[in-house]
Length: 128
Ligand SMILES: [Zn+2]
Ligand SMILES: [Zn+2]
Image (cartoon, rainbow, N blue to C red; front, top):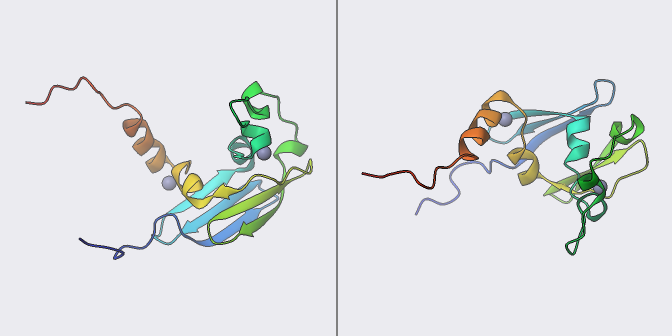
């Protein structure tokens, strides 16, 4: 087995929140770069309030209209070595975004294309 020869793809080497542009940019250890628009990041918030818990729908599941304050990134805290916690202008800061989630949701054209092919597996594919 070939273990740990490649850099961990979900490990960021640089995290830059551009408050004026409203984006969060991450450079990954494998050289990939992701730039997340703040509003897209807000929709990804994985906290119990936004996502719900114990089978209850979360706030984001109700498809609310997000205000400017709710989508304005004011700060980003590093959570250990596995996640970031953005703070929003409305005071929300309880969402811990694991790097694996962020990498998985990278909005660049290459990753979007990769996800769209992966999202449509054909279980009835006939193998010959
Ligand atoms: Zn949240
Ligand atoms: Zn990407």
